Amino acid sequence: MRVLIGYSRCPHTVAAFERHGHDVWTCDLRPSENPHHLQCDIWEVAEGDWDLGIFHPMCTYLTCSAAWAFSDGPYHQAVKPGTLVGAERREARRQAIENFKRLDALPYPHAIENPAPSFISRAHRPPDQTIQPHRFGDDASKRTGLWLYQLPPLEETAPTKGRLVEWPRGSGKIVERWANQTDSGQNCLPPSEDRWLKRSDTYPGIAAAFGDQWGNPKQKALL
Image 1 (cartoon, rainbow, N blue to C red):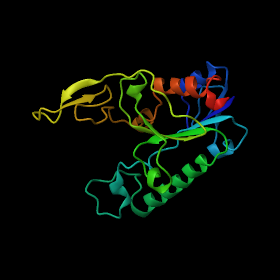
Image 2: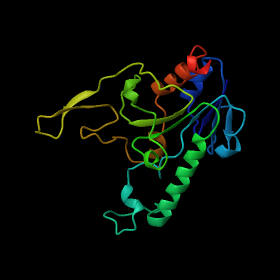
Image 3: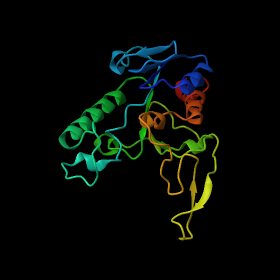
């Protein structure tokens, strides 16, 4: 198969499909050391002759986090320079939703990955599946939606237990947390300019499931 991994330079996903002998290409505006990388806008290539696509569009204006910024203010917190708010942010969300819908209308089998919950659920349709990296062998929590077209839901491969902590402190309530979480459940990745990029990485276990389940010629869905 000719496989397109859009909005991505992920070596894990490329390797997962190459293990099954597929011709795999990534596409992103950023450069990559991968020789099978298309450094361009996704719409220069997405409507080409592909057998399967996996797309990771930017979630900045699709996720339900920072929902306060879509209002016209006043805001309860300082607005960082460069952050879109109000009408500009709502227009950016509209464009992101239209781009998502266009991806979902592509005629070949494809999956679109984005955080869950998302504005897409109301503006377009809910995800076909919600997954967690700790169900695929990674010690991490990141609730992720998959919007699928002519692809089966992923089957969990290696459920991984987290650590047990009492939260809130003194409540007697025991909750499960993973390595990328504080005891309160927040992401513990340190602040940095590329924090958004690090948080967008595809976890190795999920990438392996993409290739082993959707890229395996024995899968009935792709026969």
